[in-house]
Image (cartoon, rainbow, N blue to C red; front, side, top):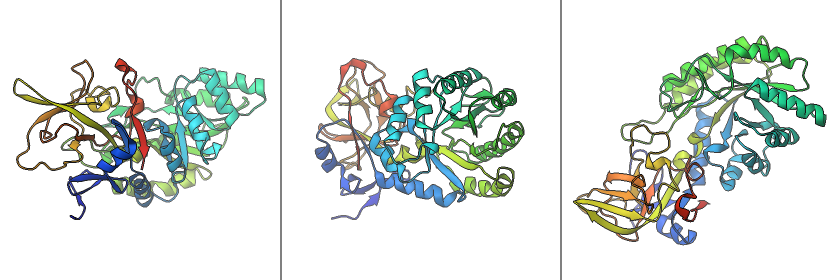
Length: 411
């Protein structure tokens, strides 16, 4: 038997006898264990290692929070509950998932610009921290607090006056539906002094999916400075300073992993002044994709090899209805291929042949791999989309055309 080898630079899963290994077993065996395709598989070892990598690179007093929206699968959330320091949710449904874990309520926050009254009542009853997104939301929280006699925990989500440069998705700076514009925050803080709420601190999040350490470093410097300016108007001690995240993972050819060491060194240099200026604060880095993105796979089976006018197509039982992002229809301006391989025949025997991996849907958008080195796949083989642990199933139109939803497993 051959020894396990690493197939590619960004492939986190070992390969043994030309078969991808997931959770300590071959992909072939895993597919048999799951019992059907398509399916998502998440490797708990890789999630655990990623948390450990962050702990080693970042200062010891940086708390790690997981943004549930990246992957809310209950088993994944339960696993992370024993590894990270807190959770951030973006809906009442996600709140229910995290309240089933051992995470203390005070280490759970709720962000999102459109919280319903029902969700606000749930959050207040649970005792979690609500990230305020507007002055109107504060009024609704006060109304519920007055009615119930509760004293809600609130942090102000700030729309900063700067952007995270080179960010895949800009969440702050300029006009945004997220948070309260930085210049309006002092007025809101002044109002809070006489209201029945418990001020916790600030959530300053400027962007996501960034691979440039220098951009993240600049944003973190600006975040601390903005927090200092706003703290002068705060109605109480800053006990929480959420610095956001933005740490990206490589998806496409030519992309390099984030220089985590550089980010950690910069934070270590900033922390002495931060501890002096915010002596009672918990400093938080909130990440989603960075924890789970590279630990996940989407697996579908080849139904048919089909040739059309000189182009080979691998028609699969899975497609964009399960994995919209891999089809290029979830934020990409110019479509680029996610890393895709044949999981039970990782390396072709002989010269590689080009093929496009397409799904079963009646739309030309249902392409998960366009003209890639996949032509050695046979009917029945397992095609794997890597980097699928974040924004996969729950970010996809699963009801489209009535196909059944895929299984998810944590192994």
